[in-house]
Length: 199
Length: 217
Image (cartoon, rainbow over all chains, first blue to last red; front, top):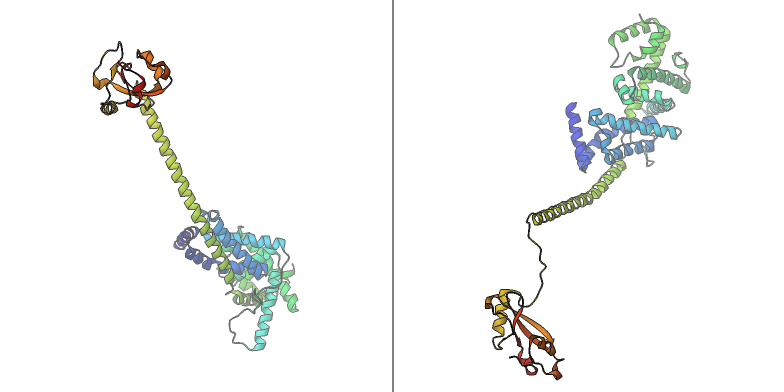
């Protein structure tokens, strides 16, 4: 891990000096996770695109803001992305649901599915419902769900990413899960099997 | 054994990789005996499955290529801006270094000048036949005409004499004791004075074209 960090620091130094290949190596390494996080948090591919762009523009324009002694580059970039996402969420009401289409309007290519058309439709519906439910969560609970359940971070990693104690993340995740359960039961109009969500 | 409240807090972590094994075992044990908590766990597992589907559906999502293009453009623009800046910086430093060098040399010259007492700077005055070499040349040039010694002058060795060429009015020769025709006193003539070591004129001669109106004895 330390070697990877050192390699990234070396890449960053080269990138700051204008080495395009070094910059692209860093970009390719981090952009996908940042984009997914921003997309899952904002529900807007445009907003996610803007967030990723702003994060890397900051790295180009003000590389000194990253201080290796304070943490890894990935964590720094995530922190910047998180700030941008939060600003976006503060400014804009939740935008339209994400990912059905690409930013250019073309349908997004999803992996081939060996299911029947009916099963595919049902699966898509379920995905849409859970996506809606996640996007409907309050920001801090949504963030805990996105990091711990979708990005599959450990509590420790999520706490580090959010800059809060592990207990806070666990508590937010607990509330987020409960709300998610309740929302999905409402969306699917299924009998409530657990009362924990509404408490 | 875990109770329902504790299960609500951590029971849904049962399937997580980072769940504490002892806590997970206690939660599983509680879910087996409590139908309400078991239902909640099943419900959560279903949601978790949907979340996994969502995760898989979006796992390959990444920023569109245009973001990369924009960033590359920005990088190139900054690089282009940086290169002239570097040149300007180099030129500035070079100028500063030259200025420091010039100031240093100037100061050194000034210090050397002050360090030699008695040395004075003499402004160079251009005057004909000021040096010994020039004098020899002029004497040689004017070999054709003889000098007439001025009354009361003391002869000095030739090597210490200088010829001074002067253009003056003929009437002024009278002050050196020469007879001048009054009707031509206002004419301008070319006169060579032989200047001795003491800086006083010792002899004089008129140039060929000026001799007609004046008589040198």
